[in-house]
Length: 256
Length: 298
Ligand SMILES: Nc1ncnc2c1ncn2[C@@H]1O[C@H](COP(=O)(O)OP(=O)(O)O)[C@@H](O)[C@H]1O
Ligand SMILES: [Mg+2]
Image (cartoon, rainbow over all chains, first blue to last red; front, side):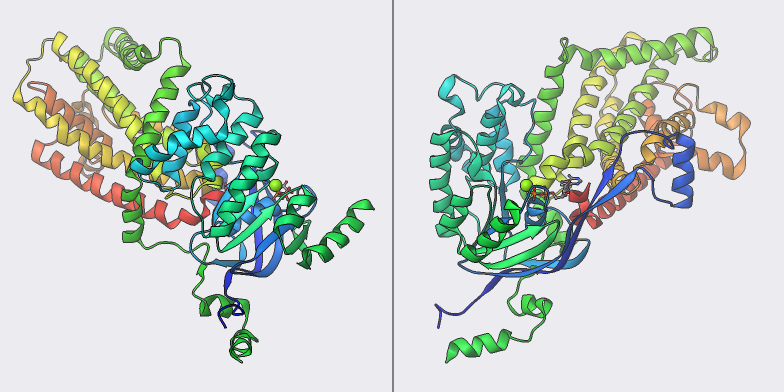
């Protein structure tokens, strides 16, 4: 029975996610106008709302690897952030077993700080103890390969090429074991040799994780890793099913 | 067959019921206040590292680096001394006016820059918030630590000014430690309040400079506190004298200066200071905690 029992690990129930964007200072930003808005509790007209995910529902089960596909700006990263509990859901709900972790290349670090200090900070922010951080620090820097061309780990992150900083971010995030693992285009990072290394690392993490979500623009890596696929378009689910079927539909759509 | 039994138990359930049946937790669930406090304690190393990182990166940005830390309060005090001490000559009756003025300026500056940094402690770290999981209150707390550390540097400068101005070094100076503690708790509360409030009402940013100036004038920083007594009476005077900044500044003056006229007897000032820091500290923390799950929205 244990084989066939399907245990849900992530459930999205009609989830809506809305970003609020504050536009730069413009008209109506004088102190007097601000005071008036605070006194009357009206919204700043400079705040625009972006409805990024519009009513998404799905159930993900233990042992599944789910590919998330869709054109740019269709809401894939946004959805993953909400599953990770990093972005609040405006309507509906997202439920998860344990604490899902987002493995993204966008994890912001502090650009003024050298790489090794960013490694420490990132690991502490992921909840590691100082002893764990100390033990893993060299390994992480080694894995990221930023020191291959000289001692870059002691230079501020702002001096890194975008590929280098993406590699470092991925290496930090991949240093921890996760229950529900959300991977956002992390595999596309860096050059060929790093990609091979990171793919191996993701496979390792996958083997230990309960459920994996993978966002990738590489069709091949989705086909290789995911048996199920969700196609997101303009914030709504267009298709959800076996990878081969969904991929076929998606390709037909994008060729148009 | 057991498989179908399981399947049928799940069948027909709404997604919400299914989630509950399998013990999944709502991703926006707010931890209880004790649970949240415990998480914060577990993240104390992160807080320290984050504050340390902020300090090194802020020092690295300017050529003079650490020298500015000392220079900024000194320049501030010099400007105020020229305007209020020499030009306007507010201090006819006081011989320790420079010390009196500098204590006010430095102490007020501590809270003022805390308020300013508080407004950025969420909005300025939004990238990190959207990428990693950690109790968000670590950010305002680390911001507060940076401010406390900067103020301790300023305090050393202040001690120098007060000594040069001819005040004796006494045991009473030790009272600075508990006052600093109380003001720091007060500031943390304010920072947490501001951090969340600007995410809800970004308009306050425009108003804060005016509020701070108004507060400065109401805190007897630039002129003797006794001036309030000559123009205000009854409950109005009591309201002005209950102003937390005035209370803190008066306590520092009580600790560092000999023979100043205080707004109240020290015992009353101490009670007021404790009350303010406990109330503002707790309310600020609770207010911030209530918004914990929404900070990623920006
Ligand atoms: N920080 C943000 N603030 C406002 N809007 C955003 C933000 N991030 C993404 N969006 C918007 O949300 C939508 C979905 O974006 P995203 O989830 O990044 O798409 P994808 O990852 O599928 O390319 C887009 O319309 C994008 O403009
Ligand atoms: Mg994306």
